[in-house]
Image (spheres, rainbow, N blue to C red):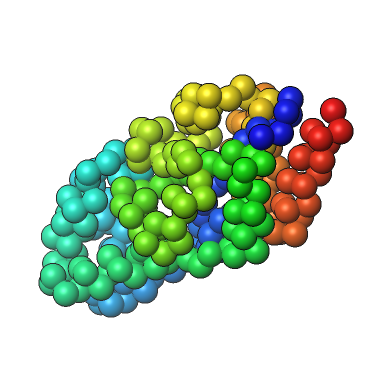
Length: 213
């Protein structure tokens, strides 16, 4: 570990480790499946909002209930629901940001590597199957498992507790400005991810500064 400076890299998943546009894909998913069921986007959304879905972003063990209620609300067959569910996770996970993942994985042994991500119940299994995050990151703090989402300060407090780290020990990387602001308000160093090359450069610079101290 580096001494006296950055001891941990704490990374977001969607939009950082995964190449996915979290602002766009939910609407695209809704439009795609509304059309599949012969509905307007508005009718599709209304049926889901009336379905009394469990809070899958802050609770575990509700994935099957969540999708079962969606299926009932839409009148979906088992085959349609299975196809929709698979399509959801493909859209949710996107593709691996391999240049960033490979760079960060190469830092194992010099700095701790961890994840803090807003998530849905089932995300750990789906992302692990696709990308094998657990081989590189420990701990992995998913919102559906810790019961709180970013940018709430408690999410960062829980992550720091799991890292056994002080705020100044951590460099946090996220693509959402509100999450960056929340981290900085707690004294955590933070970098807003926009371009992978810039993020890699920011990590390198932070670690180089610490070696010089």
